[in-house]
Structure formats: C-alpha cells, structure tokens
Length: 197
Image (cartoon, rainbow, N blue to C red):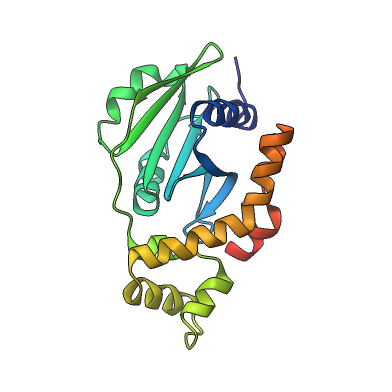
C-alpha cells in the first residue's frame, strides 16, 4: 500500500502519461490562487488545463470541500484521485464537474469523468506569472488591481493563451525530460514557483 503523496503522485503521473498520450505538459506541486493552494499535479491536454488532487491512505477529507471549490474556480477540469480507503466516500462527490480516479492494489481506475468547468476569469488570471500580468496591466502597481484589471479587460480565451505560454515556458523543458528519463522530480520547477507566489 502506498502511504505517501509523493509516491502516489509519481505512480499516478506515469499512469496518466501512458493512458493519455496527448498530454503536452505536466507539473507537480503547482501553486494556484497566489499560492493559497497547491495542486498535486496539473496537466495540459490540448488547451485544457486539468488539475488533480491526490488523497492517500494517510490523508483525510477534512479540507476537501474548500479545495474542490478553489479547483473548480480555477481549472477547466478537476479530478480527485482517491486511495481505496475513501471508496465509500465517492458518492459524496456527486457534482458532475468532479472526476474520480480510484487507486486500489497498485492500479488506477477511472470511476467518473468530469464535465468541463467554467473557471472564474479572476482566478484564471491569478495563474499568470507576475511578469506576464505586469505586461498585460502596465499601469497597475497593486497586485490585486493588476489581476482584477486583467480579468475585466481580457477575455478568458486571451488569458488562457497567455497562461499556456507561461506554463510552457516554465514547465515544458522539465516535462520533456520527465518523459525521457522517467524521473518524477523533474516535474517540479522550483524557479517558477517563486514568481507565482
């Protein structure tokens, strides 16, 4: 039985890459909402930004409702990856925007596919790197004003395009190395994390 989030996240990333060959980017320990939350894993599949929250046998679901709310405000798709310990809890997550993947005896099983979310423009803007946000909101000094300006003056499509550019700049090289070397640690880009906070 896998007890540690890192180990389960690593196994899950290999499974995900094998199952969905169209994934063009992955990152682990991804901060969002200005580092209020950390996504265990994200992937970019086409232009869809997908987040995964992983709950191991050592976890509990005490904070999950708030986490889910924030994921749904920010990402196109959201999956909850649950250890078999939480199998009886699956019915609790009836929102159609929540996908469920179960980990049992070393195998992952897709239980429920999520419907696409409609992320908040403001929460999506918060995913932009600080340098990109500063370029888009040139005359705004305050961080809140900057991201608020972007969310009100740029379309979701424009924000997403810039976000994908940021993600590729920060994580693509690490993701390509991960695919070749199969070293999970490569999915973390510590330099980019500083800029997002």
